[in-house]
Image (cartoon, rainbow, N blue to C red; front, side, top):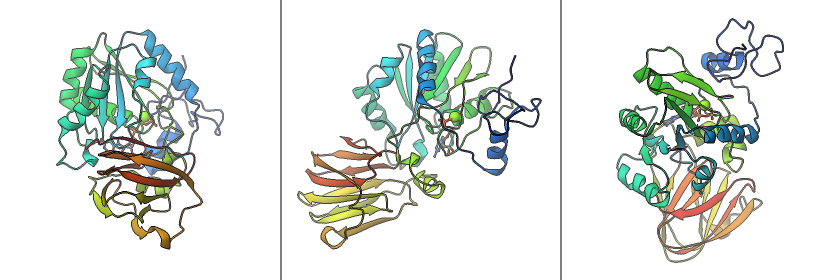
Length: 333
Ligand SMILES: Nc1nc2c(ncn2[C@@H]2O[C@H](COP(=O)(O)OP(=O)(O)OP(=O)(O)O)[C@@H](O)[C@H]2O)c(=O)[nH]1
Ligand SMILES: [Mg+2]
């Protein structure tokens, strides 16, 4: 039987250094890519087709097993219904990275936001894998909903699936195995099965790559800046018509119509934000423009970056790379 890397799940091989799964000797437990990543933080990008993700989901759909659908609180997609179309299984929505959202925000508010809009999830649980927050509670709910020993962990790349599993291994098993994690997309390359105890086996999966996310189109340094490591210190700007916000050289938002309005930014603290007079600067007008009609209490979500809470009605023009998606939703916070 072929041997799989314990870090990312790829099949190990010692023949071709340029191919996935290379290791100097197949006696090793992890591939060279995982070794470098773990020991030196060096990253080799791998591109994977989303076809594989779909194949894996189809297989999971045939089982009756419980699935944890993990999302990153700053990067929740606009339509969570998709996953239910793929999977008839019991589903827990696990909202990860709670630690980056200000402590003052109530968990219940976020949980009920998703329970109301996506009632097909058996449960919605907010956690922080890194801070070990609500992990005991999550385990209780897993026990409650699991139908067999097997529980699958799926979701977009970078949601923190492998980090969560590492935490569950650490907390509830005596295994030494550590899955490879990284801030870059496509870290886990294949399914990895980890038996936690006699009652629970977790199956890690490679994430879906969201090609409408900014994270695919920025360099390493900016990617680090985009990913908040700490609690976000929100910035609020009171904008009048004719004023704009520019974030790094990535996005420009012109406030073109409406009363005085409040824009609260939920983004990494490392990102530079400027407020300008619209007419005085032409910056970023070469980017793709989308106009939005705002109703009361909306979020402008910028995929891969975070979101901006806007309280009043009005009109905005958003300029961003054409490949990156923005959308409006009801205020999350
Ligand atoms: N702030 C914060 N960051 C987290 C948390 N969990 C994971 N991360 C970070 O998110 C990034 C992605 O984590 P991974 O565990 O590799 O994500 P994944 O879902 O397994 O990604 P793929 O294997 O590519 O599908 C890493 O930089 C983690 O450190 C969390 O609870 N809080
Ligand atoms: Mg992973």
